[in-house]
Each structure stands twice: as structure tokens, then as C-alpha cells.
Picture (cartoon, rainbow, N blue to C red):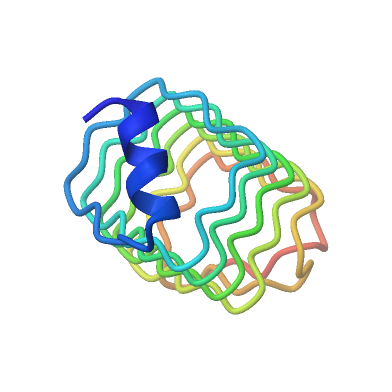
Length: 135
């Protein structure tokens, strides 16, 4: 499925996109609220400013994704691979991160600043000290 068809299906209220391959997709500032992208490949995708509020990204591959200014509030990122992703100013309010791989990810200025990463993999994650709870 290409990006155009993906966006058309989403606009028609089809939110089920499990295991979809959107590697390298350019979806900046797109509204994907409530989308089910569990197991999807979004590696190296441009997702800056995207609205993924309440999205299911469980087990998704987001390695190297640009998630600057993205709204990931209330999303399920359990077991997602965010290795090397950039989450500058991303909103992670009430996001589920258990088992998420955040190695080498940049979490600078994420919201909330007291996010608990106790169940996430965070080796070498770029986070300003005093902003995030470490395991």
C-alpha cells in the first residue's frame, strides 16, 4: 500500500494498519489519531508534527524516525523499536513505553518532563539530566 492509499483509507475511518510497511514515508503533520499501526515498519519515516494520539504502535519499528513535535499522548509504544529516533519536543503524556527500545533516541524537551522510563530500554538515550526518570 502506498502513502496515498494509506491516507485515503484513514480518511474513510479505516484505522487498521497492522504490520504495514511505511519505511521512509513522509507523513509530517498528518492526523493519525487512533490508528492501529501495531507491528508496522515506520523506520526512517518523517513523522514530525504528526498526531498519533491514542495510536497503537505496539511492536512498531520506528528506528531512526523523526518524531519531532509529534503528539504521542496516550499512545501504546510497548515493545516498539525507537532506536535512534528523534523525539524532540514530542508529547508522551500517558504513553505506554514498557519494553520500548529507546537506545540512542533523543528525548530532549519531551512532555511530560517527568516521564517514567523504568520499563524501557534506554542505554545511551539522549536526555537532559533532571528531566526524565531513569530505571
